[in-house]
Image 1 (cartoon, helix red, strand yellow):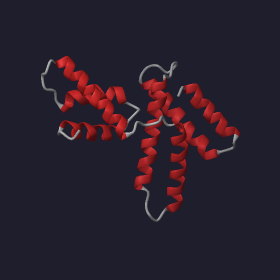
Image 2: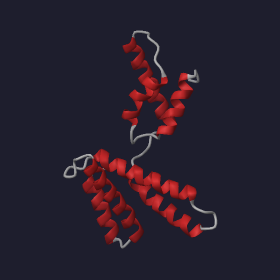
Image 3: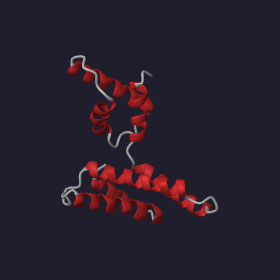
Image 4: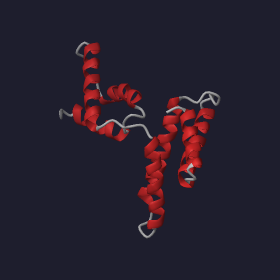
Length: 153
C-alpha cells in the first residue's frame, strides 16, 4: 500500500464519519511519517515504510488486546474494533504451508551454492528473514526453520 492510498483511506473514514477508523488510520499515517523521518526520507515514503507502520500498529493493538484487564470488556471491545480496521489495511500474511515451501526452496538454493558444505540455522534465518519481512510472522518463521533443520520435514 502506498502512502497516498493510506491517506485516501483516512479521508474516506472522515467522509464516513467513522471517528475510530479515522483515528486508527491517522495513527498509521503519523507512524509512517515518523519512520520516514528516522530513515531520512521524509519526502518519499516508500511502500515498505507504510507496511512497517501498519504492522507496528497491528503489533501494538494486539498487545493491548492481550494485556487488557478481564474486568474491562468495554476496552477490549474498542481494541478489537481497532484491530478490525487495522486488518483491513494490513498486508496478507503467508500461511504456514507457504512459509514452509519458501524455506525449503531456500535450503535447496543454499545447498546448491555451498557445494555440500553444511549450513546452520543462523545462516538460513539471515537469508530468509529479509525476503519474508512484512509477509510472515518472524516467530512462525523461526519455529518452522527449527522444525525443518531438526529433521521434521
